[in-house]
Amino acid sequence: MSGILEARPRVGYLYAGKSIFNFVSKQIRKVKVNEIKSVPVVIQENTSVYDAIVTLFLEDVGTLFISNSKGYLAGVVSRKDLLKIAIGKTDVHNIPVGVIMTRMPNIITAVPDESVYDAAVKIVEHQIDALPVVEPVETEKGNHIKYKIIGKISKTNITKFFVELGKPDV
Ligand code: ADP
Image: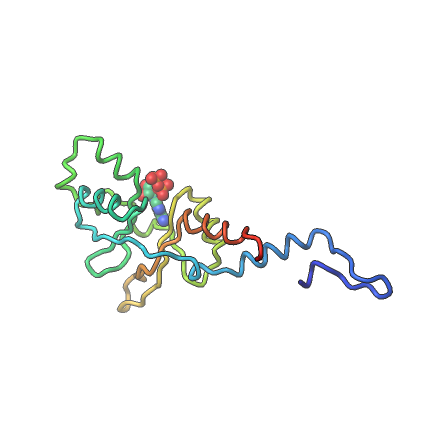
């Protein structure tokens, strides 16, 4: 509890004022993405927009991560990306999701040992719902770094984490 109470000789323990907030903030920042990440729903970039929409319903998620044929992160599609294409005249059976996704290198990601707090800041600053949790993979010389998709951090994960934090001790 260091930082919350200060020991003063012949006085006793004093409440150290503001530092209780530092204490709470330090505790929150200790929790890593790895501890609260969930299973990602990943489809390949050649999957049709129609099948992507079906996957969204079947898996009950709001964001799909898209991989290339080698299994590395290629992009992201959100509910509204799919809605936008579905209300137009495009034949959703014949257009691959890779055409409409937000693609690399514009994808905002998180890594397992990053704090949940930092991941939440990215979600707020970029006004998005979810981040793929990735593991950078070294490829042959001269190539860009590739990312393996190993999880997902979403507003839902973070809300659940918040609820856990607020639970009273039993
Ligand atoms: P929605 O569009 O359904 O409200 P989001 O707010 O998550 O969902 O997405 C907003 C836009 O940002 C979409 O075009 C989506 O493709 C894109 N997007 C979503 N997640 C990410 C991410 N992690 N990195 C980059 N772009 C993203």
